[in-house]
Length: 153
Image 1 (cartoon, rainbow, N blue to C red):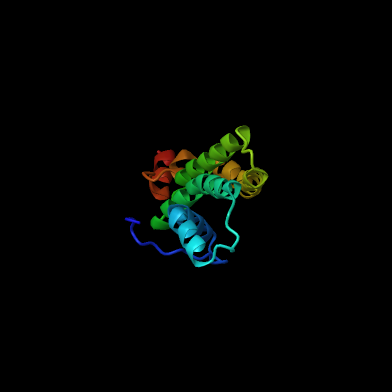
Image 2 (image 1 turned 90 degrees about the vertical axis):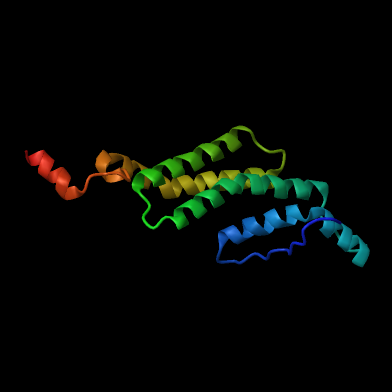
């Protein structure tokens, strides 16, 4: 078919992003999968157009979470300021998806679940991090000993 040969990816129950990669890959190879299934066994049930749309919307919604996970995992030391920005960014993205709901109930359920879990997990952390002095949140912050010396002078 003139496309790069890609293999399907399998979900790993202990890695949330494996589900993202699995869904993303099935979208990338959608046409070859449909063609192959039709040739091998035409009686096999295939995904409906609505199910393909749900997969596409799910990948679009979860993609920012994968990007943040990759970014945070790449850092040796993640600063509080970066965590605050990323958590707030994810909340804004999910809130935007809530304001512009999908026509598909499973997608809306996913968005609502993401928002509920983020609020449950991040609200106290974000509130406490915002209370910290600015120098403790920045990546170019002064060491604690320097800050203490400056306040003594």
